[in-house]
Length: 299
Image 1 (tube, rainbow, N blue to C red):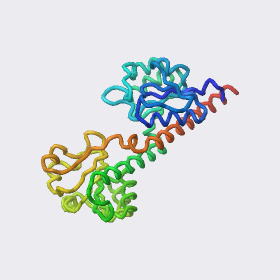
Image 2 (cartoon, one colour):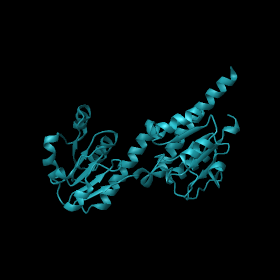
Image 3 (cartoon, rainbow, N blue to C red):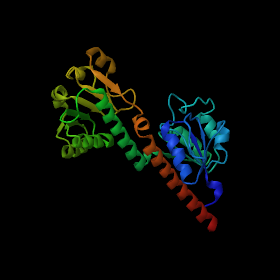
Image 4 (tube, helix red, strand yellow):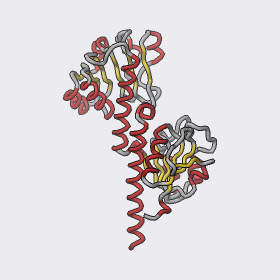
């Protein structure tokens, strides 16, 4: 590989980006970071003074997961020039941008500049690692927020997608009695294999009365005020769904039920594992790009 390709920029984000930068550096990549307050210890990682300096000679760019938050690229340091518009303007053609939940319009504009976009949240290895981290994070939240043990508790998991299925497996290994509510037929059948019970819509009110812990993974309003009326006051509701979540939080507060929306768990509980996973995905894509380039040059 040519040394001119050994350049990367890591922009914004949380601790995942710090570990991502250090993992790339350990692989021999020179890394510029921008929009990150936390210190990176590896000598190959250098802080840039501005976005233009960070992107200079960078063939790989790692932006945050998610890419946008409240209309801007998030970071632990305040950087007014760290915007999607500036990024499009300053990235070099033939570079690769990695981020999470990259908007379709941004992708189109990037492709017009011959910039390849790879979404971390569409890569199975990253998604799985992210889900495991979120699951361990929500279990940590359940343990610290509740006066009771998870062991032998009655847990209701709402949704049996990737996150719900991994969560059920963890809960079963902790000795919990696990019930699942899943509307989709195939997922419901799968849930019956691992959970103690899979319930339908008509059974949900009675099951809500039994639950010590309710974990929501469904990206929809599943616990409106009417359903919260069946939940015990000492039940803890933990919501993994994207904002605004799947719970009527105003109603829960009125009823004295503790319900917590928990965004960003992977970055808080397992930044090192996720940063390393994302770096490995970047290196894999980078090697493939270089291999194709060398094949074309050799023709």
